[in-house]
Image 1: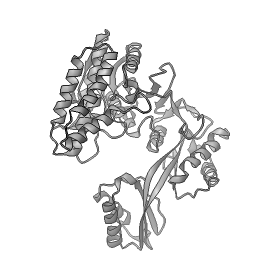
Image 2 (image 1 turned 30 degrees about the vertical axis):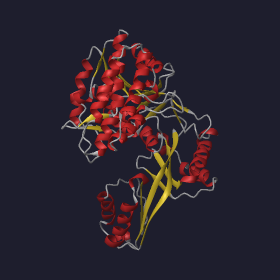
Image 3 (image 1 turned 180 degrees about the vertical axis):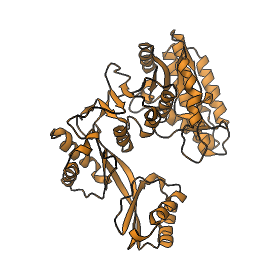
Image 4 (image 1 turned 90 degrees about the vertical axis):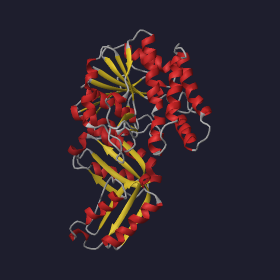
Length: 452
């Protein structure tokens, strides 16, 4: 069995959904299909998810929602008309949206989640209807039928029983069309996943049915060794390990988000990134392990929006529990951290800036000074993390020196260096303004000159 997921651009229009049907039909093993909400049809278009957020905000402000609701229905109607479906499916979608708009608004986050999820949910119903209309027996399956997720306040993840609940789908004779992006708590509350939510759903389904392969269809032929918007004509990656992809996704590779790898990683289901518009292209395979190549670096990525909490205290290294107490202050503010480079008398805690507000930042600085008696404490903003990734790095001497030399040529100062114990990645913290220049310099060093 093959599980495939189709992203927003893959299901943005009737023409795209016809491509999806042809892809699914071309291989009888493709029995489980996870779908996103319709994405942009062109550069200046609006995604259905964004239209739904506008609808949710209007409902929360107690404005008249009918016009915004009809805008969403009209997007689905244009798809249905293009596929030759009758208005019955659009009536179902309109009724569903009205029920959601009238839903409980006590918890704003959950209400918005419910409205946003209508994009994936109704697109799955529409696509299942189209499959049946063209002679491809299909069945829409709601996440209510088994994709159980945790309760607030933690970020959304599938509970262990979700996999057992969804396992019977492996025996399906029909094509299962499953909406991505969301699940339900045991109490029946809808919750959405974070970034790449439909990728996560597809991965959960692939793990649950113990698929032979998880195909993730998007709008690019493959994963590249660097961001093609920054680096001209980067090398294509034909095969990459879970660990390498996880590291690259963490730092800005948007083709496949890091959280989506966990379910398939646990049981070793390979992933194939493919292009809906060019399905014959081999794409990029994500596998448990791969043969060594002559190139130590597989990819280079970067992500901005990081802040650093810098703390200095003489003889910090002799103080038992200092690090634990510092991280406890962040935990009390519900803030996760990324890296903790340290010296004898100082430590930096790197975190994503979007977790900070002026209020919690002030509380953190105050508590560190008062409770840990720090001599100096400061929150610094505007950092990027540059990540060099490759399974071959551990067997290659002088790689860090080569990277540091390439960075120095850009005029940037390296604020932080961190190498994971697995030696698969090397992370440099730099000021955000140098991010693109550094990416280009590192690509030139490790790929363009083919020194590897």
